[in-house]
View (cartoon, rainbow, N blue to C red):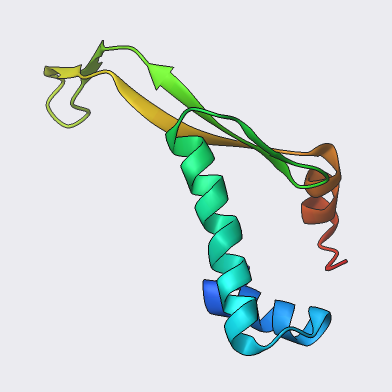
Length: 100
């Protein structure tokens, strides 16, 4: 597996090269898109990006868990979690290792 991590800077550089905006405009565009996505998720909306996947927020209820080391019961408080479900196209691309 690759050790490379895709960063905001990488995304803005790709926008700069492929779209032709200035570097500052490209960085602002990436920041704007990420802000819209995170704001929507923070309010509980689902974010669906066609041919990529769906981000959604789930509410998990309180439950009793166990400490695997000691076996002691531990209460787990209710919380909201972010989930991602890849599209079938994304699953295929990852499985085949295709870049495009």
